[in-house]
Length: 314
Image (tube, rainbow, N blue to C red; front, side, top):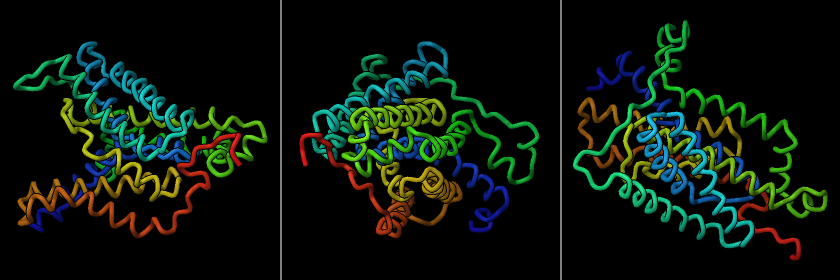
């Protein structure tokens, strides 16, 4: 068993799967960096991703266009996150309770919409998933090529968004406004920076990223929609943001840790490892928890993290 697990082909397969399985976590976490940097803790990410997955599949199935499916997921994510923004920013409700409620609502609403469109079928409808794009020349490089350069378009976009997100947050006025609003909203307000406007914008960006993450699950990975398709990845993404200490590159590494654990447990099942199946399924989440415990104590949360801002309060 261990000989087959440690073979070159097996290692390449696990590492390539790591890239794929990390993608939805990475997309959602990158969006979460914007929102949490602005002071919003959104535990409704799971619901946003599930809604995105459902609307992406429904749109792609009926239109025949995977691109339209992804766009529908992005729009859905933005709209759904606006609900969270309204509750937390305008109504100043408790963000933990609001996010938890929106996760429950999103998971249930997605299943309700899907069943109203397709009904209950013995075999779930499918779409043709995004095809693999082999990057010319690069995909031919031994070892590295199959790991990094033989994936579908959504995976490439996800990893290109890492440097893009870093540039936006670190090198633009908008990114500076986000960080200022998260750290010192009153000071930002005194300088004419719209706290509510900036937080709404951050939440919309997070929704777009989370919607795309959901679209990846139903169009780029499984090519179907199932109840529980997101499988807790929204909550893992929230944890990865804390693990990364709100830095896009570290968020990528956090997502890859989860992706590796998921790929490893799948490979262990494939080679018939004499390990209880329940433990293997638990492995990615257990590893994520251990990593978070080791680094979360060092995390310095934004000063206004999960705190509503009111100009009238001192």
